[in-house]
Amino acid sequence: ETGVTQTPRHLVMGMTNKKSLKCEQHLGHNAMYWYKQSAKKPLELMFVYNFKEQTENNSVPSRFSPECPNSSHLFLHLHTLQPEDSALYLCASSQERGFGYGYTFGSGTRLTVV
Amino acid sequence: ELKVEQNPLFLSMQEGKNYTIYCNYSTTSDRLYWYRQDPGKSLESLFVLLSNGAVKQEGRLMASLDTKARLSTLHITAAVHDLSATYFCAVDLLTGSRLTFGEGTQLTVNP
Image (cartoon, rainbow over all chains, first blue to last red; front, top):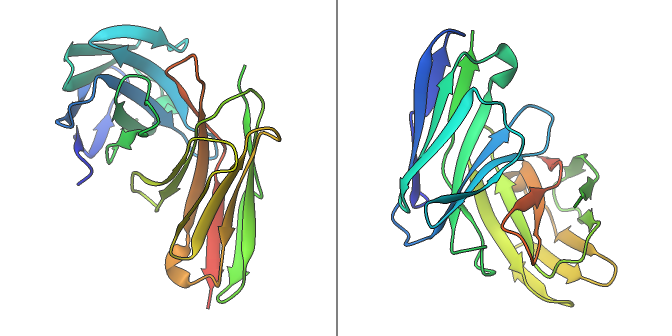
C-alpha cells in the first residue's frame, strides 16, 4: 500500500454508462493528479489540483470530469466513453509542486470500455 | 514543450551483466525522478535527483544527473531476474506542477 488508495481496481463499462473513479490520500499532500497510461504510450497528465483548485486541464475531453472536494480526495467522473479510453488510470499526490520529495502513485484503476 | 526521451525502449540482458538506461530531456530542470513499474502494478519511486552531479545508489541500481547535458542515467550492475520491470524517468519543471514522463524502458533479465 503506497499511501494513495484508488478504487475500484478494475472497471468494465459500456459506452453509455456513467461511473466514477475514486482516489484518496492521507499523506498530508496538497496536490493531486490524474494520469492516463495507455499501452505503448508515455503516461499522460490529465488534471492537476493544488489545494482543491484545478490548476491544469491537459486538453482532456469533457467526457472526463474531475472533482476534488478536499485535499485528500479526488474523483474522476466518466460518461459516454469510447473504447480508446480503455487504459490504466493512475492517481498521484505530492506536496505542492512536488518540492523535490516526489510523487506518490496509487495502484491504478484498469478501465475497459466495451 | 518539455520532452523526455528514454533509450533503449526495450532491453533484454543476461543475469550478471551491466547496462545503462539513458534519459534525455529538452528543457532546463533540476528535478528528475526514476520509477519502476511491474506489470499491472503502480509506479514505485526509485530515485529523486535534485541537483547537477547528483548520484544515488540503491542495491544494483545507480542513478545520476547531469543538468547541463540534460541527461540522467540509470546504471544496472550485475543484473538479476528480479530487476525485470519497466523503468520510467520523469522530469518536473521548476515553474510548473506537472511531471512529464519518458516512454519507459522495458527491461527483461534472462537467467
